[in-house]
Length: 417
Image 1 (cartoon, rainbow, N blue to C red):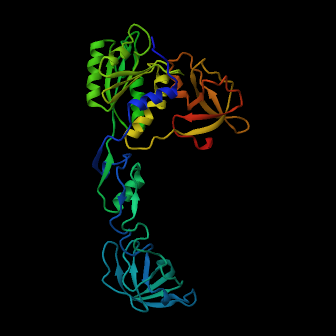
Image 2 (tube, rainbow, N blue to C red):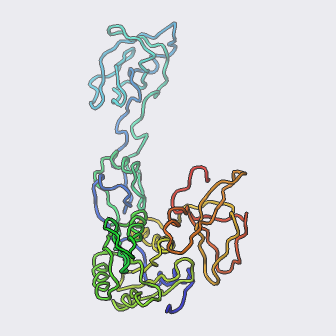
């Protein structure tokens, strides 16, 4: 039997009284490995970008004043004294009434202060006719105009995506100092569960939770470590949990947390070490049987076996912890406003989460339509639901056409916002 059902807020408070989610240390990795990692320190540019004045077009480096007054019927005539390629320092300097051929990205030669585009010129032997005047600095990117030496270009806590990694490479940084990724051990329990890929014996079901939870861990910034399916055997479960606690920073189990004779996870967890079970049931629907334990300094979340319940509890309680352990800010998921498609009722005395899918009505308003769950273990709830609507314990119901906040499982569709 459950000891005492806590409210969701009480459960969160108990977790934070026993466990402080914080980064697990830092490591230095190459940029090729840095995608989606979290920076552990501010990054300061050690040089100007670009490091020299450079041309932004193909054309001719000139003194701008030499082109003043140039037009279609009265071109300016300049002497071509050479050419400048990208990747090499100019060996020439521009004097009055001189020009040098230059390509995009090439350093500007001394004496030149503008570039006239090639399409505005005509070349005859070593003479250049310029048909459009340029101003000082035109078609030139100044040294340091993108990044200044000493400037903080990235901040601690930023996630490294393609753009951020490009910035690091631009200033010559080959390795980034990032927070260590939390390892999350994941195991399923129950004699009825079989791993996908194997033949499904009579009376068995495939292991859904381990794989949906592994994906959720990765999406939250953790590294899932799959430990397989453990039968309803106390010794086997205890040994696997001990291994998980040694090899991972956080442990997730699913199944075996209700009140049946084979629901052995809470007792096994309580026997592994102090303080043991700290939460034994939460007044929410779905997800009531969730059990949370602390062994030494590591949390173990024992989630319900029903797939929709397990993923919802992960979203509510586990995801924020993994984010903070990875060095990222704990972020709420995306939300959108919608109209309730029908009246929605909570479970008596429990905070209730109604799985919904989104659609547009005739007035082009976004509508949240409850997903028919049938029984609580229905996997189709996961595939059909776009998110959930929360009904607090003191609400009687949400009325049809009432505006609600929908907490999305993923990114909002472009026409939802």
